[in-house]
Length: 192
Image 1: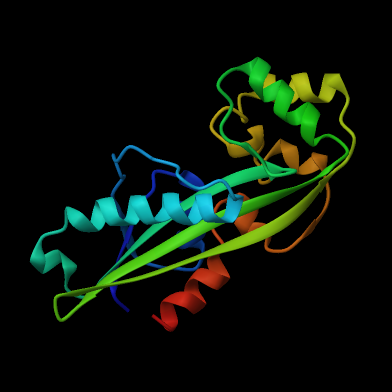
Image 2: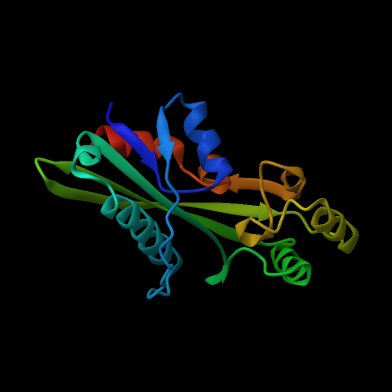
């Protein structure tokens, strides 16, 4: 297996890669994310590619040998409205109120970059999961926001923590909602 570099500071992505026993290094992209697309799946693919490209552009020639860089980005969308990380508790409340009793989508874009004989190869894909929320009371929303587990997560919730109680069902990959479609990633890496 190639040397793997994860271009992400996400603790959830780190945990998912560790869960499948991959050995990898983390290098956090410092590039300014520029969104030129409007369709959710195109946005996450664009952002994942920017992160992977940024990290791969800083690799030395020797680091590029037998190396795969993984860039990833996750967004939550409700009726094609993008719900990023909340900017304030009030913004988190508005997002959770919007998701309450509704179906929304979680998109994760993943870009793989590797060098072979000095030539850069790139593969980008996305995964989509439909998430169905139970209706939420204001009390549940405020209690969750007070827990502090919503401010660093797209859509103001993390399915792997207390917000698991909000989810009626999902249609698609659970790990995609956490932040990385790990089984698909492994398949794509095998074929890359």
